[in-house]
Length: 127
Image (cartoon, rainbow, N blue to C red; front, side, top):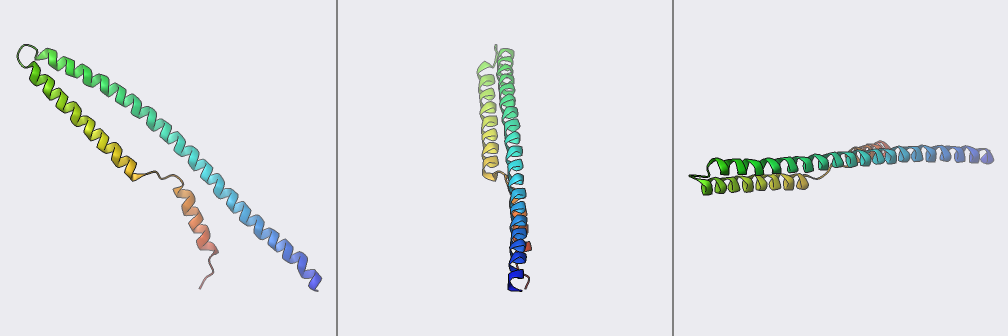
């Protein structure tokens, strides 16, 4: 009878380990998918930021030239000064927005961490 328990215990242990490894594999696959999604999101964000900065920069330069030429005879220094203040203000606003985004941090692996917390909760003995 003692000999009969050993194979059942070993099979039960193997089943438990298999279930644990399957859960770990699923969680690791989720981590990989999240990392790939975050990489794609960051690359799209970077491309859009670079293009936006380039186009807005050209627009600001051409607007400054236009306003300066428009007021060349009477108020050219005022036009250049106001354009400079506006561009610096926009630059400071953009820098503060970027800094706030950096402080907010990434949501990378948030879903995986939530799933692992649920797994741990499910494995805890009920009291």
